[in-house]
Length: 98
Image 1: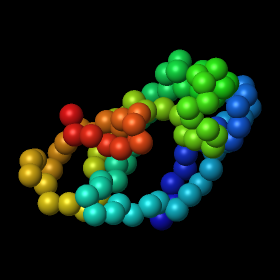
Image 2: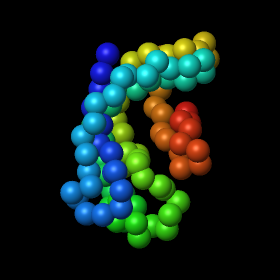
Image 3: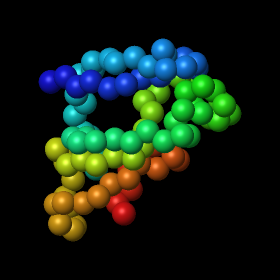
Image 4: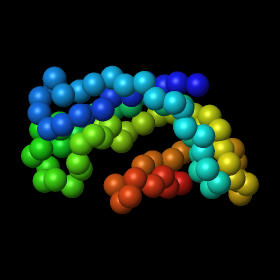
């Protein structure tokens, strides 16, 4: 199965945004896969794309961390309800239950 995403290929203006198609990854033990319904891109993402936010994020990367989605597949034994909210965290891009 395939999915599409936006990638910042190198620092610059909007012209550096590319749509790429990848194989849909399978979650590993202790992970979930989320079907993204909508995503937001903030001003900070623009600064990162242009290289103004330091070099903490190196291209290629996918901008946007504000998401709304549904858990599509999970590989864990839940201790709570199946419907949960997850939010990516800047530190190592791990997901966290909130």
